[in-house]
Length: 594
Picture (cartoon, one colour):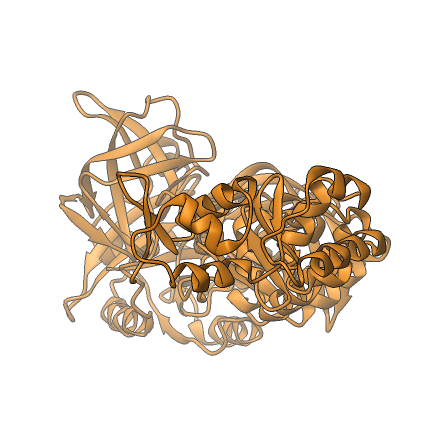
């Protein structure tokens, strides 16, 4: 199915043409049929001779119903633009074309109606010239008179060519169905309709009703009036919802795949110059249109470059958006239809707190491609979770650096360089601390997750028991502690198992904290709280014990080591823990063979 919006002047015969092409009445309200004027969105469809099905969203043309017109144009990929041969180009024709251009629609067909009342040539030439200046570019034109029955076959053939030029949507993409109608059916409950631009909806799917509605399960599904089990975009669909009260859904809400979109009330966007360019002053409080939604917003211009404006938009209520989404801004207080097209660049921008931050942000955004990719978002934010990137519309996720975190390569390299300096600074201020707590390092580096700190550890920094220290921690010992450690190792030089007693440690001012620091630096072997030896004493003990008959007693070990029970028993227990010796049930020990 292909979906086309019909746009043009209120009296140019849009609805009449749709009726003639489809055999259906797009004007749903009696008031519309009585006045011969489209007030709200109308819907109809037809099967073409090529086998394609084209669905029409007939939008109102009168300036009083501009919001309704924009709600119908928003999700639609192509337009059937209608101009009357006897009236030619009108102000409202220009307004509709400006809206089509602002929304970035690039495919269309010009239908010059009422060709039985006047020569269609002049109106066709003027309309084609005006359309060519917009994103639609050069479009095909047909002259038609539904009343006289001429040109209808040519119009249907042109529609088939237009439908064939519309690219297929992604059936595996996340669903975002902008609601344009909501009503109840007795015995069925809540029903909503909309244009599904991409993705696939199936009976039984659970979707989120945004911005603040409950979770909704698809009870049943229709496309073009026929029940379906599954429908892929682009399509006009009606969804019967379970779990949603009838008075909750309204036009402008959206049903979305959970986790597939960023529900945001603040965005950075590029406001693009249309055919007439941008004014020197943009509206400070425009209405933002996206899909069928219309939300009041506050606009702050960050800067301008190459005719475009870069702006921070704060929305009165959040919308589900992706980076790259088309948006339209309208000034509701302007005398004419003042509308400007734009593109969402960053759906979750950081605050602008420093002097000059706005200008810097504009310069950064001006260099982004259209649409932005994951590298652009990561370069700006440094670190993002995979879920954030997915919700921003990124399908090709970069490799994570830790758990589900992705990082900008330059930022990650800078963090690796900063970590040793951060640990060194902490150690200098706290020389006898067990090490720098991982959470302290996380805070110092401004990281959102302690798992990222663990991923940065390596090289000059080692981690142990939730603490970080420099691999060369010996160099960071206070001079007095380093001198005391040298005195202990000198004492042990000729007698490696003559551990200093508590009085000797007190005289050297080696308390538990200083001993622990020296042990972490590899300068002492801490066998127990009150027993310290020189590094390598465990290897020397294993060598001496290997000369004993196996197994051996504690007394035999003490004699082989040439030390007291005060040292021998804690040392043997240390060797047990180190898997050097094995204690047997009869309290003897043997060296482990493995």
